[in-house]
Image (tube, rainbow, N blue to C red):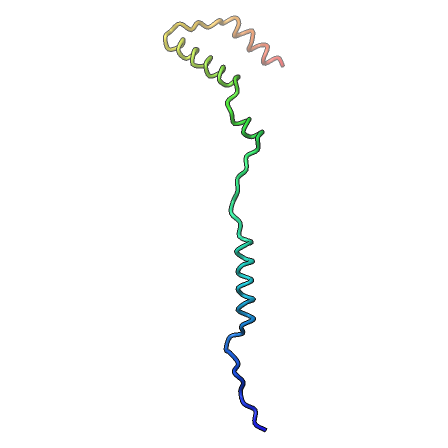
Length: 87
């Protein structure tokens, strides 16, 4: 009895299908970065009325200092410093 080679392909067709399936799975695993900002964070990023009032007051004080109209109340300043450091 003579046994001859049967047409066996050099590459396993099942293996190529398996590799393709693995590549699809790997591509599905790749994720892109996402950024989600909560509504609370959005509220915090908005400027508050206190901040705007403070900025206006600072601008007024700067203008008074530059023009030379700002007068320091030394007694009030000293009393506040003492009160602050006694805490």
